Image (cartoon, rainbow, N blue to C red):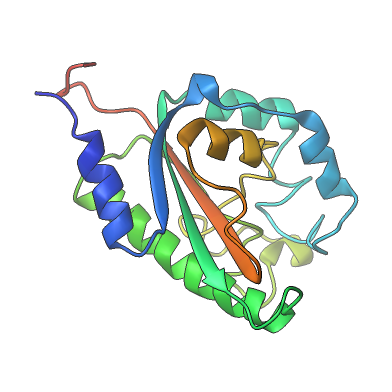
Length: 191
């Protein structure tokens, strides 16, 4: 029996992703400078939660973790904004994106029975109003906290181009990506 990659893509699209594709992990470009951008704290989340740097792990650790997987489901959601720098619209879109991400992840786990996975979301985790990391406590919901593709130093533009997914989706839009890396089970052939 072979794994149905097309069904995985179609399900992601049905679950409100605007674009979806399969990528071989060997084709993903990891760039330490992208990870170093986290240290500049542009998003304001550096050193504030378990799934952002530095707590999430070093660039080399994360790259090694990601490279244990063979394929990934890359998906993108696109949202229209009132204007180019509509911060409230971007944050509202991010909440919707997080819901789409969780729906696709649930589908991957339960319908497609992929359990050997690494799920990476767009941006930092916002699951708790205050991350336990700030109180030097363990994550309260480790099965619901997801690191970002940025924290892993993944070149998102290169990855999207490799999959035929547009990085830019038009004026007054914001786009978010999710990536679920996986290994198919032994019940499937490698075709």
